[in-house]
Image (tube, rainbow, N blue to C red; front, side, top):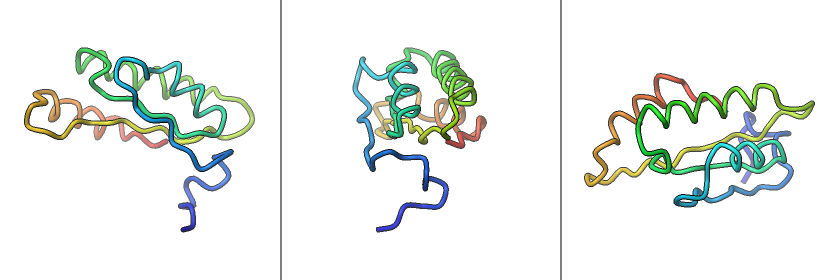
Length: 101
């Protein structure tokens, strides 16, 4: 299976760092992306939607300042079960920010 054009040349290995509950955050995501690995984190690791938006801003800013190699993309794990009362608000943040990585 071929990699999408938007990812070609940005990965050192075809790996996704799993979104780990209470462990994954901006530092881990940025480190992964700067080293050619897709970094991910659960939105619920940040305790509020406002905090989640802040993390996205921090990640975007730090990746925009990354070194000479284009960073790997990052991803967010959104829990889409009805037990997640933040789903609509968190999804709105992702859509509003037009997460592009």
